[in-house]
Length: 243
Image (cartoon, rainbow, N blue to C red):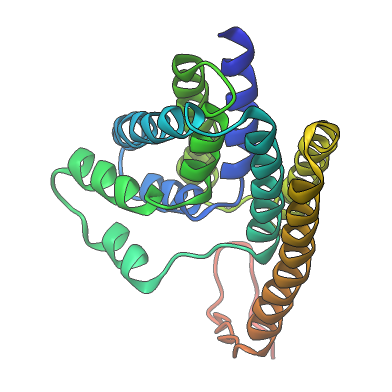
């Protein structure tokens, strides 16, 4: 169980770096009490991940272990491209953080619960449960996500600024590619010829498709018009007016 806890903590912590829920945590923490935001995130995470564990446990009982390992490897490659593409808050998610004034705990918990449905941390938890002890995965994945979001809360509450998202995304992407390669190498000797062909085709499709998605996302981001900053010309403390 300890191994399941540690592996799940590491995988989910990395998956959460630069994710939209971490950006949401930072946004909420800049406006509300940090401990209320953290409690809301913890409650939503525990609920979401217990559902993920249930799904993963059911799948793990029905699928051969070597095939599960191969699927897990491909999933890690998908997570790598997902992270590399980058994540941003939608207008609705930003508006939610802006307009909440009462029932902060419920607002944060519900926002995070909805944001995590179908997210890569939920999918990672499902995948991990097919291979490891379910309770260890639940505890480890919950702690991993809370720890990553606590980091964002600290930044939002104390510094009021974001971590260097690009550097975080690159680091997390490299780790996910490493996890994926490791799992695929572990599963490959145990697969039959047909499974190897299918796995190879899926990996190739994932690499090509993921590369195209990332390229398109980065082109769209580069083409998006940037809003010019308006500089304040009013002299302030320690500043002199230019003549």
